[in-house]
Image (cartoon, rainbow, N blue to C red; front, top):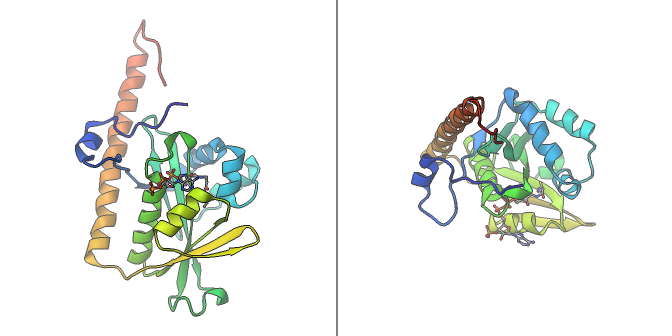
Length: 225
Ligand SMILES: CC(C)(COP(=O)(O)OP(=O)(O)OC[C@H]1O[C@@H](n2cnc3c(N)ncnc32)[C@H](O)[C@@H]1OP(=O)(O)O)[C@@H](O)C(=O)NCCC(=O)NCCS
């Protein structure tokens, strides 16, 4: 599989001033369920175990995606140039449990799960999705973000430590949580700007995809992916 090329459109080239490509993180909705299922089913067996904590069959993965409540939770994704979801982050909100007593005074807490396709790793996408989850929590009056993963998951542990998460390891598993500050005008603006940028990127990719499909129908053209 070819590596994800985030520099495919001029907008991204223009925005990319640093060493790492700009990552357009877009909120996902009901209509994205099919693509989400495809994303999770594309994960290798070992990655599926890392993502869900244990192996989930195709049917269980489909059931999980169909069970996501978009009115309660937030899901984010990063599309590649052929409109595949290269990454998905699920931010699930839940009422505060007794285990969170002393950690937060807020009514709700959040838990984050993330996966990035192998072809798109090491580009900062996982970190960017995590950062977006942080901002969304702050903007929704949630100050505690949990993450549950296997303690052998070196990459996720690295991201968690870098973010300053408090990590508790137990029998090969790790529970981590991050305390977040309250919303401020900058966090609200940051979320809105990221979504705007991702929406423009999405529209550009959609148009390019449509144009490519039309071109591929011309006589004598070899269709590309
Ligand atoms: C964990 C995962 C989401 C990371 O995605 P990603 O897009 O590659 O992550 P990023 O590029 O943002 O960051 C990776 C960081 O980990 C570091 N890293 C990579 N492999 C590492 C390893 N074996 N040990 C320690 N750090 C490692 C990278 O150097 C990078 O650090 P930097 O930002 O300080 O340079 C991805 O590997 C994945 O989908 N794994 C399978 C599912 C999973 O484990 N989900 C998490 C449980 S919910």
